[in-house]
Length: 88
Image (spheres, rainbow, N blue to C red):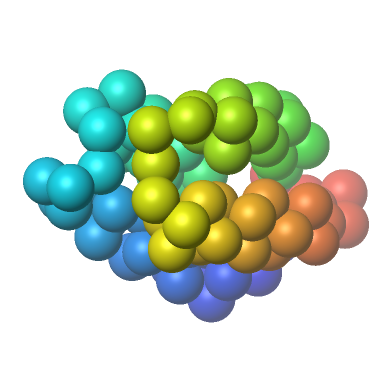
């Protein structure tokens, strides 16, 4: 798994989670996705699937602005590209 991709995602998710213009439920999910991606106790595939589920739920929230939605779609694409190559 590319740690640079995860670091980039975590940094961006941190910005979303601190943006007061983003609805609270989306900010909370952004924090959750960040925690999921950094949890080394789970396999990459488990982390990837959990992160995708949360990001998909965030993407359908009708109360977010277009720039936040665009970020979420980019994050979905980045998470989908992660590969564990048999590693944890």
